[in-house]
Image (cartoon, rainbow, N blue to C red; front, side, top):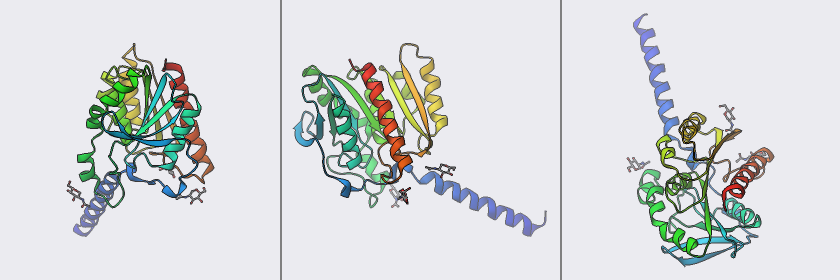
Length: 261
Ligand SMILES: *[C@@H]1O[C@H](CO)[C@@H](O)[C@H](O)[C@H]1NC(C)=O
Ligand SMILES: *[C@@H]1O[C@H](CO)[C@@H](O)[C@H](O)[C@H]1NC(C)=O
Ligand SMILES: *[C@@H]1O[C@H](CO)[C@@H](O)[C@H](O)[C@H]1NC(C)=O
Protein backbone atom coordinates (compact mmCIF):
# COMPACT_ATOMS: atom_id res chain seq x y z
CA UNK A 1 0.00 0.00 0.00
CA UNK A 2 1.41 3.44 -0.94
CA UNK A 3 1.55 6.07 1.79
CA UNK A 4 -1.20 8.15 0.16
CA UNK A 5 -3.48 5.11 0.17
CA UNK A 6 -2.54 4.30 3.77
CA UNK A 7 -3.34 7.87 4.76
CA UNK A 8 -6.68 7.73 3.02
CA UNK A 9 -7.44 4.45 4.75
CA UNK A 10 -6.56 5.92 8.14
CA UNK A 11 -8.70 8.98 7.45
CA UNK A 12 -11.67 6.76 6.64
CA UNK A 13 -11.16 4.70 9.79
CA UNK A 14 -10.95 7.85 11.93
CA UNK A 15 -14.08 9.28 10.30
CA UNK A 16 -15.89 6.03 11.00
CA UNK A 17 -14.74 6.02 14.63
CA UNK A 18 -15.94 9.61 15.03
CA UNK A 19 -19.31 8.70 13.53
CA UNK A 20 -19.59 5.72 15.84
CA UNK A 21 -18.75 7.90 18.86
CA UNK A 22 -21.37 10.47 17.84
CA UNK A 23 -23.87 7.66 17.42
CA UNK A 24 -23.01 6.32 20.88
CA UNK A 25 -23.32 9.79 22.40
CA UNK A 26 -26.67 10.42 20.83
CA UNK A 27 -29.19 9.09 23.30
CA UNK A 28 -32.58 8.00 22.05
CA UNK A 29 -33.77 8.74 25.59
CA UNK A 30 -33.84 12.40 24.57
CA UNK A 31 -35.61 11.97 21.23
CA UNK A 32 -39.17 13.19 20.55
CA UNK A 33 -39.73 15.39 23.60
CA UNK A 34 -43.41 15.64 24.55
CA UNK A 35 -45.60 18.21 22.84
CA UNK A 36 -47.28 20.01 25.73
CA UNK A 37 -49.77 21.62 23.35
CA UNK A 38 -51.48 18.22 23.14
CA UNK A 39 -52.67 18.62 26.74
CA UNK A 40 -56.36 18.72 27.52
CA UNK A 41 -59.27 16.46 28.27
CA UNK A 42 -57.51 14.83 31.17
CA UNK A 43 -59.57 12.65 33.50
CA UNK A 44 -57.28 13.12 36.50
CA UNK A 45 -55.74 15.93 38.51
CA UNK A 46 -52.47 16.92 40.13
CA UNK A 47 -52.29 16.54 43.90
CA UNK A 48 -49.44 17.82 46.09
CA UNK A 49 -48.00 17.06 49.49
CA UNK A 50 -48.15 13.31 49.10
CA UNK A 51 -46.09 11.19 51.50
CA UNK A 52 -42.42 11.72 50.72
CA UNK A 53 -43.22 15.28 49.63
CA UNK A 54 -44.25 14.29 46.13
CA UNK A 55 -46.89 15.70 43.89
CA UNK A 56 -48.46 13.44 41.33
CA UNK A 57 -51.01 13.22 38.58
CA UNK A 58 -53.71 10.90 39.91
CA UNK A 59 -56.48 9.34 37.92
CA UNK A 60 -58.69 6.27 37.83
CA UNK A 61 -60.62 4.63 40.60
CA UNK A 62 -59.56 6.13 43.94
CA UNK A 63 -61.17 3.30 45.93
CA UNK A 64 -59.56 0.50 43.92
CA UNK A 65 -57.53 -1.95 45.98
CA UNK A 66 -55.03 -1.98 43.15
CA UNK A 67 -52.72 0.94 42.44
CA UNK A 68 -50.58 1.45 39.38
CA UNK A 69 -47.65 3.82 39.77
CA UNK A 70 -46.33 5.02 36.43
CA UNK A 71 -42.73 6.22 36.43
CA UNK A 72 -42.08 8.69 33.63
CA UNK A 73 -39.15 9.19 31.33
CA UNK A 74 -36.82 12.18 31.82
CA UNK A 75 -39.46 14.54 30.43
CA UNK A 76 -41.59 14.08 33.50
CA UNK A 77 -45.19 13.71 34.52
CA UNK A 78 -46.64 16.56 32.46
CA UNK A 79 -46.25 14.71 29.17
CA UNK A 80 -49.70 14.59 27.52
CA UNK A 81 -49.29 11.08 26.13
CA UNK A 82 -48.20 9.71 29.49
CA UNK A 83 -51.25 11.24 31.15
CA UNK A 84 -53.48 9.69 28.48
CA UNK A 85 -51.87 6.34 29.23
CA UNK A 86 -52.54 6.90 32.94
CA UNK A 87 -56.19 7.69 32.21
CA UNK A 88 -56.53 4.51 30.17
CA UNK A 89 -55.01 2.44 32.96
CA UNK A 90 -57.51 4.14 35.27
CA UNK A 91 -60.38 3.19 32.95
CA UNK A 92 -59.27 -0.42 33.38
CA UNK A 93 -60.28 -0.09 37.06
CA UNK A 94 -57.07 0.91 38.79
CA UNK A 95 -56.08 3.82 40.95
CA UNK A 96 -53.24 5.43 39.01
CA UNK A 97 -50.50 7.73 40.19
CA UNK A 98 -47.82 9.41 38.07
CA UNK A 99 -45.44 11.00 40.58
CA UNK A 100 -43.25 13.98 39.73
CA UNK A 101 -39.91 12.47 40.66
CA UNK A 102 -38.07 15.57 39.42
CA UNK A 103 -39.77 18.16 41.58
CA UNK A 104 -40.61 20.19 38.49
CA UNK A 105 -37.05 20.07 37.10
CA UNK A 106 -37.94 18.09 33.97
CA UNK A 107 -35.28 17.43 31.41
CA UNK A 108 -35.49 19.59 28.33
CA UNK A 109 -33.08 19.81 25.44
CA UNK A 110 -31.51 23.03 26.77
CA UNK A 111 -30.10 21.03 29.69
CA UNK A 112 -26.93 18.95 29.84
CA UNK A 113 -28.16 15.43 30.45
CA UNK A 114 -24.94 14.34 32.25
CA UNK A 115 -25.38 17.21 34.68
CA UNK A 116 -29.14 16.76 35.02
CA UNK A 117 -28.96 13.05 35.74
CA UNK A 118 -26.58 13.68 38.68
CA UNK A 119 -29.48 15.28 40.50
CA UNK A 120 -32.12 12.89 39.22
CA UNK A 121 -30.95 9.36 39.71
CA UNK A 122 -33.67 6.73 39.22
CA UNK A 123 -31.91 4.61 41.85
CA UNK A 124 -32.16 7.35 44.43
CA UNK A 125 -35.74 8.10 43.40
CA UNK A 126 -36.62 4.46 44.10
CA UNK A 127 -35.36 5.01 47.68
CA UNK A 128 -37.12 8.36 48.04
CA UNK A 129 -40.42 6.84 46.88
CA UNK A 130 -40.60 4.43 49.82
CA UNK A 131 -43.04 6.62 51.82
CA UNK A 132 -45.30 6.82 48.77
CA UNK A 133 -45.48 3.04 48.45
CA UNK A 134 -45.92 2.67 52.21
CA UNK A 135 -48.90 5.04 52.14
CA UNK A 136 -50.57 3.15 49.29
CA UNK A 137 -50.05 -0.13 51.11
CA UNK A 138 -51.50 1.37 54.28
CA UNK A 139 -54.64 2.18 52.31
CA UNK A 140 -54.87 -1.54 51.57
CA UNK A 141 -53.75 -1.23 47.97
CA UNK A 142 -51.44 -3.64 46.22
CA UNK A 143 -49.12 -1.95 43.77
CA UNK A 144 -47.89 -2.32 40.22
CA UNK A 145 -45.19 -0.16 38.65
CA UNK A 146 -45.05 0.71 34.97
CA UNK A 147 -41.77 2.38 34.10
CA UNK A 148 -40.76 4.11 30.88
CA UNK A 149 -37.12 4.76 29.96
CA UNK A 150 -35.72 6.55 33.10
CA UNK A 151 -38.71 5.10 34.93
CA UNK A 152 -37.68 1.65 33.72
CA UNK A 153 -34.60 1.79 35.93
CA UNK A 154 -36.79 3.08 38.75
CA UNK A 155 -39.11 0.11 38.20
CA UNK A 156 -36.26 -2.39 38.15
CA UNK A 157 -35.01 -1.05 41.49
CA UNK A 158 -38.42 -1.07 43.17
CA UNK A 159 -39.00 -4.60 41.84
CA UNK A 160 -36.20 -5.75 44.18
CA UNK A 161 -38.27 -4.75 47.22
CA UNK A 162 -41.41 -6.23 48.74
CA UNK A 163 -43.30 -3.01 48.04
CA UNK A 164 -44.79 -3.99 44.71
CA UNK A 165 -46.54 -7.04 43.25
CA UNK A 166 -45.68 -6.66 39.57
CA UNK A 167 -43.63 -4.50 37.23
CA UNK A 168 -43.58 -3.62 33.55
CA UNK A 169 -40.57 -1.91 31.96
CA UNK A 170 -41.22 -0.23 28.63
CA UNK A 171 -38.03 0.62 26.68
CA UNK A 172 -36.04 0.95 29.91
CA UNK A 173 -32.69 2.73 30.08
CA UNK A 174 -29.61 1.81 32.13
CA UNK A 175 -31.20 -1.42 33.36
CA UNK A 176 -28.61 -4.21 33.54
CA UNK A 177 -28.76 -7.99 33.37
CA UNK A 178 -27.55 -7.95 36.99
CA UNK A 179 -30.71 -6.06 37.96
CA UNK A 180 -32.66 -9.12 36.82
CA UNK A 181 -30.92 -11.30 39.39
CA UNK A 182 -32.66 -9.56 42.28
CA UNK A 183 -36.12 -8.84 40.91
CA UNK A 184 -38.70 -10.26 43.31
CA UNK A 185 -41.94 -9.91 41.37
CA UNK A 186 -43.37 -10.83 37.95
CA UNK A 187 -41.62 -8.69 35.37
CA UNK A 188 -42.56 -7.72 31.83
CA UNK A 189 -40.08 -6.05 29.48
CA UNK A 190 -41.30 -4.31 26.33
CA UNK A 191 -38.39 -3.49 24.05
CA UNK A 192 -38.03 -2.04 20.58
CA UNK A 193 -36.24 -3.40 17.54
CA UNK A 194 -34.47 -0.07 16.96
CA UNK A 195 -33.68 0.75 20.57
CA UNK A 196 -30.04 1.79 20.94
CA UNK A 197 -30.44 2.42 24.67
CA UNK A 198 -31.71 -1.06 25.52
CA UNK A 199 -31.18 -2.97 22.27
CA UNK A 200 -32.81 -6.35 21.65
CA UNK A 201 -29.58 -8.17 22.52
CA UNK A 202 -29.68 -6.64 26.00
CA UNK A 203 -33.31 -7.68 26.40
CA UNK A 204 -32.21 -11.23 25.52
CA UNK A 205 -29.60 -11.00 28.29
CA UNK A 206 -32.36 -10.03 30.74
CA UNK A 207 -34.32 -13.05 29.59
CA UNK A 208 -31.28 -15.32 30.00
CA UNK A 209 -31.06 -14.31 33.66
CA UNK A 210 -34.81 -14.53 34.25
CA UNK A 211 -35.00 -17.95 32.61
CA UNK A 212 -32.84 -19.28 35.44
CA UNK A 213 -35.02 -17.68 38.10
CA UNK A 214 -37.73 -20.30 38.03
CA UNK A 215 -39.87 -18.60 40.71
CA UNK A 216 -40.21 -15.28 38.89
CA UNK A 217 -42.74 -15.06 36.06
CA UNK A 218 -41.43 -12.96 33.19
CA UNK A 219 -42.40 -11.92 29.73
CA UNK A 220 -40.41 -10.02 27.14
CA UNK A 221 -41.34 -8.72 23.72
CA UNK A 222 -39.45 -6.77 21.09
CA UNK A 223 -41.77 -4.55 19.04
CA UNK A 224 -40.71 -4.43 15.38
CA UNK A 225 -40.29 -1.22 13.38
CA UNK A 226 -40.07 1.13 16.34
CA UNK A 227 -37.32 2.78 18.38
CA UNK A 228 -36.72 3.60 22.04
CA UNK A 229 -39.55 5.73 23.42
CA UNK A 230 -42.20 4.08 21.24
CA UNK A 231 -44.62 3.38 24.12
CA UNK A 232 -44.91 6.93 25.47
CA UNK A 233 -43.28 9.41 23.05
CA UNK A 234 -44.62 8.47 19.68
CA UNK A 235 -45.73 10.40 16.63
CA UNK A 236 -49.46 10.81 17.22
CA UNK A 237 -50.15 11.28 13.50
CA UNK A 238 -48.35 8.09 12.46
CA UNK A 239 -50.93 5.26 12.54
CA UNK A 240 -48.28 2.53 12.89
CA UNK A 241 -46.64 4.31 15.84
CA UNK A 242 -50.00 4.87 17.50
CA UNK A 243 -51.06 1.26 17.01
CA UNK A 244 -47.77 -0.09 18.35
CA UNK A 245 -47.99 2.08 21.46
CA UNK A 246 -51.57 0.93 22.04
CA UNK A 247 -50.40 -2.62 21.75
CA UNK A 248 -47.66 -2.00 24.33
CA UNK A 249 -50.25 -0.53 26.70
CA UNK A 250 -52.49 -3.57 26.18
CA UNK A 251 -49.58 -5.88 27.04
CA UNK A 252 -48.86 -3.91 30.21
CA UNK A 253 -52.51 -4.00 31.26
CA UNK A 254 -52.76 -7.74 30.64
CA UNK A 255 -49.66 -8.26 32.75
CA UNK A 256 -51.07 -6.17 35.60
CA UNK A 257 -54.49 -7.83 35.33
CA UNK A 258 -52.80 -11.17 35.73
CA UNK A 259 -50.55 -10.40 38.69
CA UNK A 260 -51.98 -7.44 40.58
CA UNK A 261 -54.07 -9.15 43.20
C1 LIG B 1 -22.08 18.26 30.07
O1 LIG B 1 -21.53 18.09 31.34
C2 LIG B 1 -20.38 17.25 31.38
C3 LIG B 1 -19.91 17.13 32.82
O2 LIG B 1 -20.89 16.65 33.63
C4 LIG B 1 -19.28 17.81 30.52
O3 LIG B 1 -18.19 16.91 30.51
C5 LIG B 1 -19.79 18.02 29.11
O4 LIG B 1 -18.81 18.67 28.34
C6 LIG B 1 -21.07 18.86 29.12
N1 LIG B 1 -21.59 18.91 27.77
C7 LIG B 1 -21.91 20.05 27.17
C8 LIG B 1 -22.45 19.93 25.79
O5 LIG B 1 -21.79 21.12 27.72
C1 LIG C 1 -35.27 1.10 12.32
O1 LIG C 1 -34.00 0.79 11.80
C2 LIG C 1 -34.01 0.55 10.41
C3 LIG C 1 -32.66 0.06 10.00
O2 LIG C 1 -31.63 0.78 10.61
C4 LIG C 1 -34.42 1.85 9.70
O3 LIG C 1 -34.48 1.63 8.31
C5 LIG C 1 -35.78 2.30 10.20
O4 LIG C 1 -36.10 3.56 9.67
C6 LIG C 1 -35.80 2.40 11.71
N1 LIG C 1 -37.14 2.66 12.15
C7 LIG C 1 -37.42 3.39 13.23
C8 LIG C 1 -38.85 3.56 13.55
O5 LIG C 1 -36.56 3.88 13.94
C1 LIG D 1 -45.34 11.82 11.96
O1 LIG D 1 -46.02 10.95 11.12
C2 LIG D 1 -46.55 11.57 9.97
C3 LIG D 1 -47.40 10.53 9.24
O2 LIG D 1 -46.67 9.33 9.03
C4 LIG D 1 -45.41 12.12 9.14
O3 LIG D 1 -45.91 12.77 8.00
C5 LIG D 1 -44.59 13.10 9.98
O4 LIG D 1 -43.46 13.53 9.27
C6 LIG D 1 -44.15 12.46 11.27
N1 LIG D 1 -43.55 13.44 12.14
C7 LIG D 1 -42.35 13.29 12.66
C8 LIG D 1 -41.88 14.40 13.54
O5 LIG D 1 -41.65 12.31 12.45
